[in-house]
Image (cartoon, rainbow, N blue to C red; front, side, top):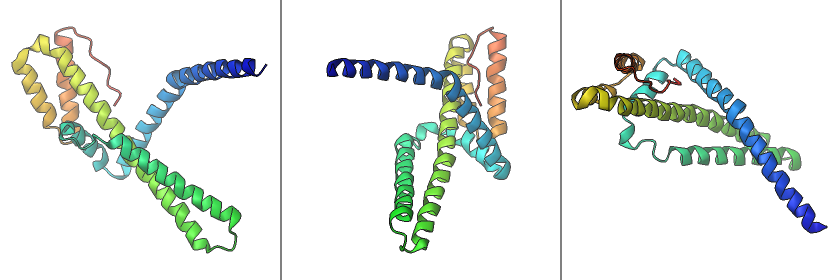
Length: 188
């Protein structure tokens, strides 16, 4: 009887995991992608250099600046959650504890979450821009030849702001129309 419960539990776990994965792939992932774009646009409306820094960082991607980015974002999340849990634990169990410690715990957790979102969104879009740009250039390479490919790549490495990237993207689109080639759609 216990073996049947264990097997049933494993089957239910696999089934629920598959449903969750499909939900993430079809509904939640596109929602979070669009939410990240809206947040990036909101940040850029407050700080105009934000999007420009994303495009410039994407052009300089080969410098290795974001090699360990995923792990550092994960570490920031873990630290923020630990600080938040300590603060919540202190509010429930140690009522006579100094409340400024609890306030600072919540404040530090909030600041870490904000910093994590800020840099996480930036890292996400840097990767998206790099992926889109290099894939598009490689698709076009056999059609445009090495000289035009190297010029296109040089233009990409010279991107310093959003306008430079839009100019680069227009060149990509013009080549794809000229040679009737389908290139990936930009998510940016």
